[in-house]
Image (cartoon, rainbow, N blue to C red; front, side, top):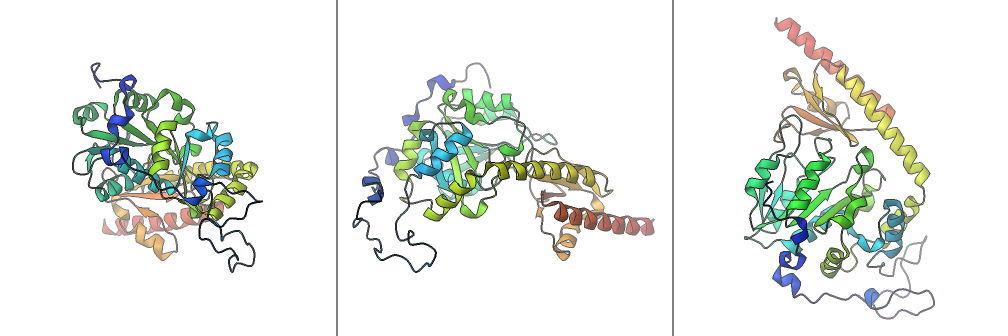
Length: 373
C-alpha cells in the first residue's frame, strides 16, 4: 500500500459500526442481572427447579454463565492475554457472523478475502447480503498480493479476512505483510489463527494492544482436540468485545462445553504430548508422500494437515481412498488447488495405512501408464 494510506492511528471504531447496532438495546438475561451463587435460591429464569432426568448430574437444569468467566480465565493464562480481551463463541463461525453483523451494512459494504481460504468468510458474508471481494493468493507460494489489495480498497471496505496458517494451503502468511495491512487499513482486520499452535510463527495475540482494528480468531477445536464442544475464541480490544457481548445470543456456549473445556485446559501436559506427536507425524507424512511417484508436490505446512498435489495419472485417488475407508478432502476444484487433496495428520497407524494405500495406487497407475506405452 502507498505512503498516503491512512494508518491505524486514525482508526475510529464507532464509524465502522452499523447504525442499527449502535442504537440497539441489548437483551439482558437473568444470569447477567445476577450471577450464580451457591447459597441463593434462584427463581428468576424459569428453569426447572427439580432438576433434569440425567442420573450423573443435577446441574444442567440451570442456564450457563453467559460470559464464560471461569473458562476465559483459564484461556487467559494459557494465551497470556487479559480475559477482558477474550470473547468466546459457539465455534469461530458464530464470531465471524457477529463481526459481519456489527460492521457490514447489507448491500452497501464489502469484505475482502484471499482465496484459496476458509469458505465460511464468503458464505456468512453472502448470508448477510454483504458483497465479498476476492483477491487470490499468489500462485504456488500462496502469499498476499499487496498491490492488488491496495487497488480494491474503498470507503466501503469494512472487513479483511486473513487466515494464517492458511486453510486449505497450510502455510503461514508472511508476518510483515499482515502487519502492513493491519497498520494501513482503516477497517477491521480479522486474522484467523485456528492452526497457530502447529506453527513456528508467533501469534499476533501477543501484540493485540498495538492494533485497535485487529480481531484474532483462535479455537479449541484443532490443537486442543475439542471440535465437538464448538468453542471459538476472539482476542481483540475491550471495546470490540463489548459490542460482541451486546449482540450475541444470551447463552451461546453451553454449560457442559464450558465444564469440559476447563477440565481439558488443566491438562496441559497431555496437550503438549499430543501436539508433539502431531508435528512428528506431519514430518513423517511429508517425507513419505514425497517419495511416491504420483505425488507431484507436498506443500509446506504449518498446520495439522498437508495439501498434496497429485499427477494426471491419479484423478481417481480420492475415490480409491474412500473405497479403502480413508476420507480426505478433495480440494481439486478450489482456485489454485488443481489436482490437490487436503490430508489431515492422523495417528501413526492411520498414517501408515494411508501411505501404504497411496503407494499401492501409485504402482497401479504406473503399470497402466507403462502398458499404454
